[in-house]
Length: 184
Image 1: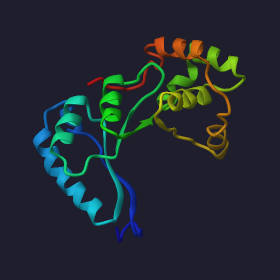
Image 2: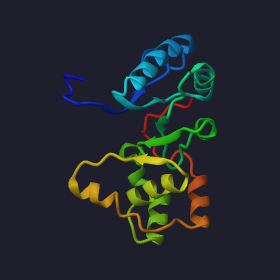
Image 3: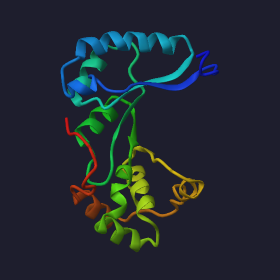
Image 4: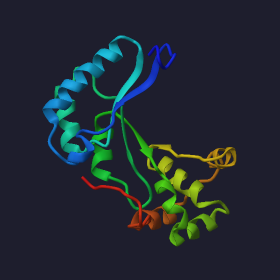
């Protein structure tokens, strides 16, 4: 906290339920231990919210069963064509806010012709459709922006994607070839 020169942190997350080099390994027991420390950060009032990131259903359910203080948020990769529905449902059923990082698939989605076509229906860009899609799914989008113009454009969401276009977007798969997402 001293090095950050902050009085508190808004949200502190466990980044993944396993070390990256052991993707998908079973660290449920270790996650319980880490979570106890996270709870102490929260009760110290130096952290306003605690949560998890990249947790699958198995790891979520185990943590919920053992936590004294339930996580407040699940952060995961989520974009048109990669929605992790089971993970989202598990988190939402347990009262967590779901944050969707990379709603533009780290830029790969911007070149998708099907999403471009939907964007044309609303006279807007692919980025705006991607962010609006996440919002209409009930998640909090966390888009990256590389310039003030992109930041401003990411707020231009005064349209609603109609049911027919949402159905089209829901049916798209592999919308971001080249994106490194992992299904777990």
